[in-house]
Figure 1 (cartoon, rainbow, N blue to C red):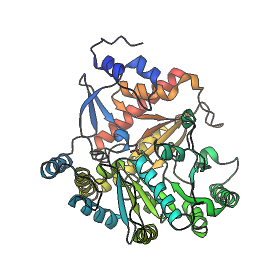
Figure 2 (tube, rainbow, N blue to C red):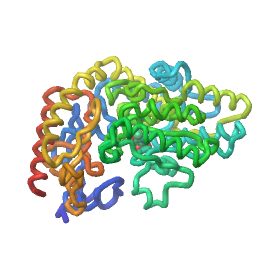
Figure 3 (cartoon, rainbow, N blue to C red):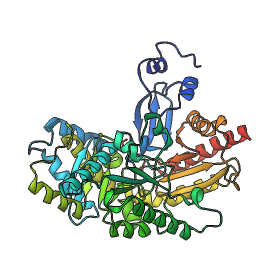
Length: 455
Ligand SMILES: *Cc1c(COP(=O)(O)O)cnc(C)c1O
């Protein structure tokens, strides 16, 4: 137990705030890190201690914590028009402009955008759109949603049902009709002596089999992160999307790319689907959409879904869905500025230039015998800890090795996140060379220390 003074920030946080996705024994032992401000890729706590945030907040603060242009864009819009909805045939000028811009930079020849306040709500909205369309088109039985094991699509009831993580059993989820296929993680899921190509073919055959078993006419859509983020940075095996897309297409099942993490440069391309060379029917966006400076999500429909939506709405009076703050003018102004910052202020180039250096630095760390796999692309990487590299056997859960790594990093002034048996590294795009080196050095030191402790 920590011995923090009752008026300390730590005690006050524990007294009246509930923690989500938090290892509570760690908080009891170390206290809450209460943060007050940030500078570049660094954040500062109430003691003035500085941390390099190698996780960009939660993947989203890609332009760092004090970008003057983003703060100014928000301030200017607050001064001009601080809030409005997008119901009843009204919406702000910023909303109109952002939709144009999103379609312009999307892979779609034409399309339409619908706004939410988060990635979870964007996935929920997409599912409701599919259910709405299928009913309106006379296929009310087409309701099932396919995702992959270990996928993360959010926490609302529907997006949690899409999220294929064991912790959702604590809520009695998933709901019926949410089908979870094999996680496309070759290192973990590949059979002994199976080649990557054979693994990909096996996943495609599984998809074909599940569709046959359930009936294509009962399935509303297949959702996939181009690279799984919260699943532990799972880069799909070679040819994966090229293998599954034709199957989905043949059965008339829309492929939805959940680009909440990959979107806007994380992989080194604007979109993950661009990076992996596939053409989704819709894109789910959030996180870097506003560089984390405003809560916002978006459903971006490509030609076929937006045409179907348009045809249905031509028959029906309204789409009865939307949030009070959907298309918020400040959020839209911030998103327009964030897109400009990422695409026109060199952030995308910085990811492309920095990625090989980051990979090289992490590859050196991965030589340690307690690292089983280094995986990633662009500015999203994971190191998976193992007790034994050959058998891929993890450390005993009782040792809490990943929590120890994260806590040791925090002690050294580096924030990085434990995810399953992996440490995730996904820094802001603005990292300088010196900051990149600092990140690698601190991570290497923390890992060495913890592996030594548990040896
Ligand atoms: C974070 C995330 C979400 C959920 O977004 P929230 O804004 O936290 O609701 C959905 N999909 C993916 C891929 C994510 O990483």
